[in-house]
Length: 288
Length: 220
Image 1 (cartoon, each protein chain N blue to C red):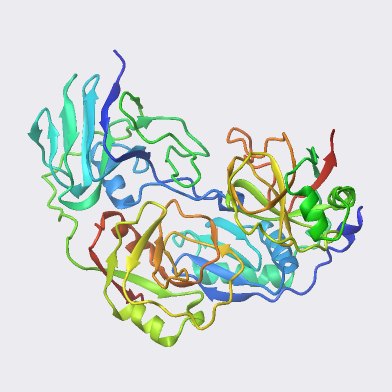
Image 2 (cartoon, each protein chain N blue to C red):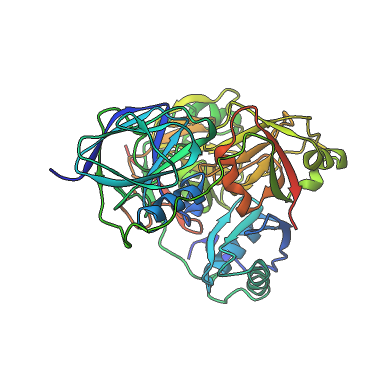
C-alpha cells in the first residue's frame, strides 16, 4: 500500500496550497498560494517539512479524509473541532494518524481557514513551480472533491520537532488592526475619504473570497470619475470600485486592474485577512 | 527591419514613483512607448530580489523581496535604467511570432462599417501591421498588442459576450489581442486562430511575452 490519503468529503472549499508561484505576473499569472502563509509555514515546520511544502487550505471545515499508510500531520490556522477517529485533537501540534483512520474538520469556531500539513508534503501536479490552486486563472490542481486520492511526498527535511505544546492564540473574533500605506492613487480621493478609510471601522462582507475581501462601511468618494488605465496590482492593494466600498486584493487577485487603489496593506498584515469571518470588524492603521 | 523597428528610438524616460506599500514601486510614465522602453531597460541587469516587473498601459510595477533588495535600492536601479537605458535595448529584436488567422469573426463586417472600411481592407491592415506585445493581463497568456501601423480606436461591445471561444482574434481600443482560452469578453472579434497561446509545460508558458512582436497571416 502506498502512502495516500482519500478525500471522503471535501467540504465547501478545500484546496491544495503552497507558497505560490511568484514571478509570472508579466505573463498574466498571479502568485496565488496559501492566504495565511504563516499558518501553512507553521504546519509544515511542525511535521519537519520545508515551510513551503504543499498542504491543504480548508475553508470553514467540512473536509473528511481517510488515511492510507500511517502519517504524521498538523493542523494550524483556524480553531475548531478537528477530529481524529471521532476524538477532538489539539491544533498547532504534530499528530500521528494510523492506517485507515479518519481526519474530520468541523466548522471553524475562530478564524476561517485551517491548514493541514502532512509529513512529506502532498504530491500533486506542479504548474510553474507551484502546487497552488489559483481560483482566478484556474492554474494548479482542481479543488478537492470526494473520491480524490492524494499522494504523499518525501520532502520532509527534518525530524518531527520535539517541543512542548505550543501556546498559540486562536484567531481573534474581535476587531483586527491592519497596517497599511496610503498609495498609489490616494490623491484621487477626497481628503475626507482618505481620512475615513483610516479612521472608520469596516465590516467584512460575506461576498469575499481568495481573489478579494470586500469591506462595507462609509462610501469613499473619489475626486472625479476619470477611469484609470489598468495598472499592476499586488496582494494587499485596496481597490475602490465606483460603489465606494473597498476590496482588499488577496493571493488570487488579477495581475492588473483599473480601479483606483487607496492604500496598500503591509506584507506582514496580509495573513490576517485569511482568518476574517463575515461581519468581523477591520480598522486600518498608518504603517510607519 | 520593418518601419515599426525604426520608430523604437529611446526617448528620455521620466519616471514618476508612486507609493505602493512596503514591497513594490509603481512607476508612472507619460506614454505606452515610455513604458515599453523602461520595461526593456529594466529587463537588462535585473538585480536579484526583483520578483515581478509588470508593464501596463502607463505604468511599470516592480515588486521586490525586501530581504534581498530594499525599495530605495530598487528605486536607484530604476532611475539608472531610465537615465541610461542600455544601448542595445532599442535594437534588440526577436523574430515576430506569426499567427495564422481565419478572418471569420462575427464582428468583422459590422466593425469594418464602423471604421469606414471594407471588410477586406480591415483584414489587410490587420495583417500589414507589425504588432508589439505591450503587456499581459486579463488571463494567463493574454497579450495586449499595439502597433504604430494601427491607427484605429475600436469601441468595445456594448454588451460583452458571456463566452468568447479560445483562439478568437479581437480588437478593442488601441489594442489587438487573442483569447488564450474561452472566457467572457467585450472585444470585437474579427477572426480565429488555432495557435496555442498558453502551455504550462513550455518555457515561457506564454507564446506572447511583453516586448515581443507579432504578425497575423490570413489562412483560408
